[in-house]
Image (cartoon, rainbow, N blue to C red; front, side):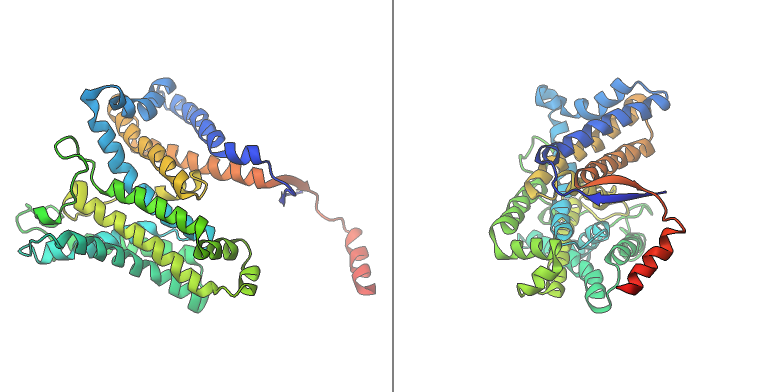
Length: 376
């Protein structure tokens, strides 16, 4: 006996709309069970995950939490918006984490090597270099897919570790701050190389969150209102129909990877020039991988991704609160996020397909099928 997935002739529009909420509910149930097995109070753990980070809404004394929420959500939204375009076109860019790091490294070039260059043009150049670095790094798996038909999942994923190790080599070697007491990291950026705060003197939230919102709106407009968006969807759903329409799959591969890499690179340099203010070996806490969850939780819709990014940012802040308050490990935080991705994909799969248990073909049936084929 084997298990098969059979595409449903019609899918429920209601369940398609409710799928992210069902997945979130199942994650809460599974998370409560996990916390119980760990010996923690499930209600208390879930409170610290989802309620405590939002107390700043009604408590003016804790408004800093909302700023931290915006800081965590900005890179998730930026990266996930770019990934949504890749996934809609049926190109699986799993290496956004590496493109995030590449953008951070490329954008840090000016303030690290030319600290005496202090002008208002420094920050715009850093952002452009960051986007260019992320896009250039994303073009590598795109080139291998178009030229050699390699699997972009493997190439983009393996390049993540190359970028991380290269960044680690830089901040521990030739870019290390000579006055940093041997700690890995570059010199602190000067004031012209730091991303401004949205509300000065009221919190740390920086303009990276604004970049994320603007990118979400622009990509939504591109996907829903332009010919390029139509091309992305057509080639993603039916490459053969796209070729008949005159669309080039090779050019589209480069387009979606470059766009995705540019947004990931922008997220990287915004993180470095924003809350961190220098390049170090731990510029990311897994934003590139978590953004995959954000993209699917937002149903690959850039506007839905904004809400999904805020929800996942809550799990980061809530995970930190739970670690401090009730002693939950960071591994449990990652497992909780993994549950969310699992249930999102499971719900979407069961909406589009039904499970069928098929028995193995009998020995007597095989010769009969062979005879019928021979007669035909």
